[in-house]
Amino acid sequence: MRLSLTALGGWCSDSAMGRLLDKLKRGAPAYDVKVERDGFTLIGKPDHIDEFSDIVREAADQAGEEFVVFTTSDGHKGYSQMFVMPLDDMAGL
Image (cartoon, rainbow, N blue to C red; front, side):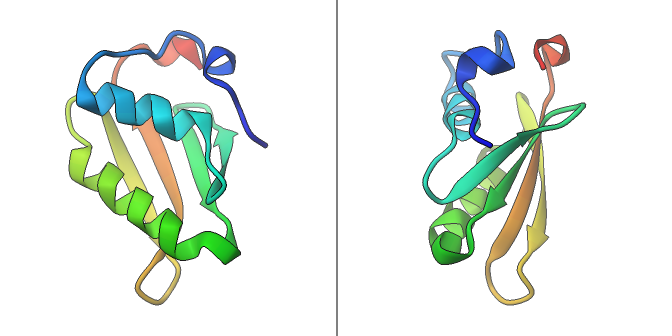
């Protein structure tokens, strides 16, 4: 399921981290987005796992003040899923 930014409410920010958060929520060919109670899960597509793993690494590097991430390894050197939890405006879900 792919979601648009409007489906996720008012999570917009002008900071670099906020722009990454907005980008993650929009989805990409490498993953699907699933809305959860306290955030959203990105689910990597098996045929794009290297691209998805790069996205996960970027998000993990930028996590901090605006959001945190919890990653799931694919059992090798990549990632299969990432849960993203914004740290403000949780009512926007």
